[in-house]
Each structure stands twice: as structure tokens, then as C-alpha cells.
Length: 261
Image 1 (cartoon, rainbow, N blue to C red):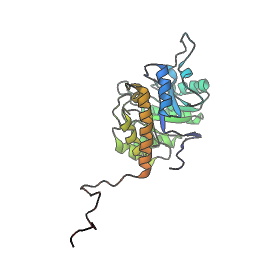
Image 2 (image 1 turned 30 degrees about the vertical axis):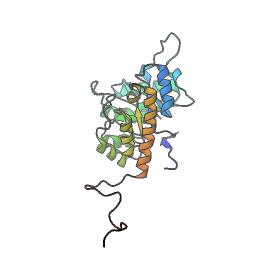
Image 3 (image 1 turned 45 degrees about the horizontal axis):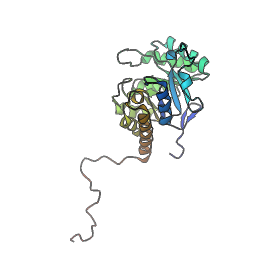
Image 4 (image 1 turned 90 degrees about the horizontal axis):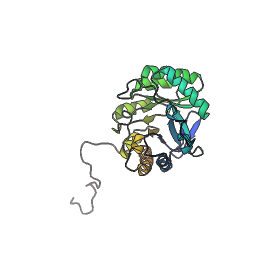
């Protein structure tokens, strides 16, 4: 734990919290929340960057590129073909090979399409991208994505924007146990305790957006999420006590001074 750098492919991050850019009450609040989060990486939906603002500014103008690494994503894509094209556009626009791959199958749950995600990942890896795929919390799907060359896997904690927390901790733990690449819980975190639970499972990082952006005070929540991720990471490294069925006195009754013999 002395060197706690997060390594994703050729990239190094000194925070295990990745944040998003959607749903904030204003771009100014977003910018302040990013700083409060302590994150080193910010994800941006390429298909939602508007170039029509009369001021000439875009979302990207409110992200400090000296402080944050940009992780473009393919949100809104429903086929592998769409996702690959969007990733290629992102590489041209942002001059990065990083891509958060999203291929959505169901507009109601926003669950990813596993088959199309794997197909897109294979093509993007061949094309030289550092691919971080959003995927269901399925150990087999995550292993398949690692095998095709993804630099990390990003299983969902719960449906995007639901705030339900980590719905299937057992699957997340299995994914982490079997993974040879970083495991980043993506989606579903609603409050700080959710982030801590994820990190205590041993995952390498947490990506969140709505849990911060939709809070009553996004800047304060961003700070809370930062502390929660750090706390969960430290607790995982420390190793939790064994769970026991019955009580076990903090002050054992043996060898007490004055105990009758």
C-alpha cells in the first residue's frame, strides 16, 4: 500500500476515484466538484459535447486539462459499429487512445450489450486503443474482455443513475479475484458508503457521476466520495477482522486481576 498508484495500461493515476460530467446544475458547479473530488480522471460523453454554444465554449472548456486526464466515452451507442466510430472521433478530437466503451442494449435499464461490447472491444484493441469497457457484473464477460486485451474491466454496481449501491457484491468480489487487470466499479453509487463498500471488496477504483451531480450539494458530496474511496482502500489493505457468529469480548475474561482461583 506504500505505492498506491493506479496503473491502467500505460497510464498512472494517483486517485482511485473517476468522475463524470453530466447532470450538474451548472458547469461551474461541475468544475468545483471535480476539484473537491480529488480525482485524476474525468469521463466525457463525446456524443453529448455541444459545439453550438454562442459563447464558443464547450464542456471541455470547464475541465482543467492540466489537472485531469480526459476519458472519453461512447455513451449513447447501441452497436459495436457506432461505438468504434465514436471512439475514433474521440481520439481525433482529444488526442488520446483512452476510451470508456459503452454499448447499451436496453434503454430502460441501460444495461450493456455484452456481445456488442466484446465485438467493439476486440476491434478497438486491434486499433491501438486503451479500452475500459462498461459491462454487466458477470465474471465470465469480464474475463472475456480481459482476454481480448482490455486495459481494465468496469462492471456495474447497479443500473446507471439508480443510486442503488453495490447490488451484487459477491459477483464483484469474484470478478476482482479472477482479474489480471484493474477492476473499476462503474455506475450505481449513490452515497459515500456505497463507494466505501466497493473499495472494501478490493476493487481498484470507482467511477461515478450522478451520485455527486444529483446531490443537494454536489461539491460537498464530491469531497465525501473522495474520503469514502480513500477510507475503503485503506480498510481493504488493513484487512478486516474475521466475522463470528457469537460475541467475543473486547476485554477477555481470562487473566483478570483479582479473578478468584
